[in-house]
Amino acid sequence: MSQILVVGSVALDTLRTPFGEADDALGGSAVHFAAAAALFAPVGLVGVVGSDYPVARLDFLAERGVDLSGLEQAEGSSFRWGGEYGYDLNTRETLFTELGVFADFKPSIPDHLKTCKWVFLGNINPQLQIDVLDQMDSPEFVACDTMNYWIDSERETLMELLARVDLLLVNDEEIRQLSGDPNLYRAARWAQAQGPTHVVIKKGEHGAVLLSDDNLFFVPGYPLEEVFDPTGAGDAFAGGLIGHLARTGTLDLDELKRAMVYGCAMGSFDCEAFGPRRLQTLTEQELADRVRLFRDMMTFEIAPSLAG
Amino acid sequence: MSQILVVGSVALDTLRTPFGEADDALGGSAVHFAAAAALFAPVGLVGVVGSDYPVARLDFLAERGVDLSGLEQAEGSSFRWGGEYGYDLNTRETLFTELGVFADFKPSIPDHLKTCKWVFLGNINPQLQIDVLDQMDSPEFVACDTMNYWIDSERETLMELLARVDLLLVNDEEIRQLSGDPNLYRAARWAQAQGPTHVVIKKGEHGAVLLSDDNLFFVPGYPLEEVFDPTGAGDAFAGGLIGHLARTGTLDLDELKRAMVYGCAMGSFDCEAFGPRRLQTLTEQELADRVRLFRDMMTFEIAPSLAG
Image (cartoon, rainbow over all chains, first blue to last red; front, side, top):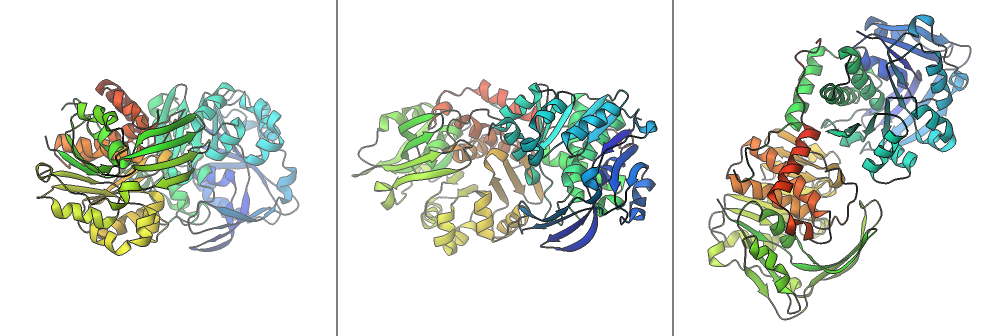
């Protein structure tokens, strides 16, 4: 089984939702991704925290088999983010962003992680994402996330990165902004032409869509009646998706489809508690049960004939 | 095979979209519904047009087997609606609404259509929808649409109607407004408790979701790269859905799932040209091909085991 390298933020989140509040919840793209992916395959995490970070609270990742030797602890404050969600949970307001030591993050990949075959570049400056790739031996599959801020300010570097990735994972707003096309499918085709064979568009409560070569595959959002805290769900989605691919070691369309479902399942679990807490306790049985629910909600058989 | 009765508007639409303009396009819920449903089962249409209506342009419906004997032509102007769509086609602006003879529409069901087993009540005053049901002999399956205007102004009558329908077909905004709940699934469960066993929520480009007893089923929106004119797509969706159910004569979950796919397919075709023009020329082969595309975009098989 191949190991996955994730590079991204490790943060402390202050969360306000209609269902409650949490201070200093574990957060960051690398944490949510690793918490999800570790259920599928071995993960190595590279990131930075400040001297104030409660590192022991990441023990659950180590227990799930995440290699934390690439997590640097630097002098200074940890990355802190505060967000407030409205009742419909589709809109969120950023209360504050304190980058702390994350502002000077220069990912340094430990030698024993340079051989990872699967790489997930969480949402950081595209130049740093390129720097990570430059340090790797010969990854077989590289996925990246990004955000509106980099699309605006670092477009050229981002395009350079796109030429080197196999999978671009973005949300609907981001792909529209990146391509300048309001139509999601044309936008995704445009993105494919820049490099990635696979493009995944995350649509929040509406699920996600995969474009892989000429193939399309949709997974609906899991119908949660209570979305407790959607923070990190996109990274947990990426963790389930890439985790499943690494576990199987293949990129067959059938595995890609399953990987999309595992991604949506992990994203949905991540919404059920503050931070990655729900993923900490998640069992393989619970995951398998949810995947079966997705199957029941999605699959149908074609009738013998239209006239039938 | 059972006959379907549709009662709704028959209009002339003035359409402005980024792809072109059309004046006096055939429009109205009953027209779009019938144009779709007629591919599946015999349809009887009840509605009203003014003395200015180009009735001969509805001949294509008769040729598809739609019984137009319930279409009354009254002295006065026909119902005219004008709408303009922005480039993303998710937002539309109503340019004008001229009810004409539709303002005094009192549906009168011809005797030979009172025996229809399947009934679709298009979006009209809920009191008129109830009046239609009161004229029917013993329909086996009644579906209704409604809109924000009636939810606001005729809530009590609408609730009376809901107690008498089997399927409520609304969009996401409408179900939220009707239930007062921002969560779609709780909102739909609430609606089920008011009467309908089946609730379908139309989500435009994001597809549609069916709640049937405790079962859920999702169909994504078909990935059109050019949405020419979305007017009437919701009614064409209803036509495909109810048409398929009437054709098979069953409400098994498997048929309901297929019906949802036929609905989404018909809705997507209806977006490809102004008015119901695309439905006029649609062949069974084209429909079957699109349903296969939906199958490929939606279905997956569960892996033998999570550890696999």
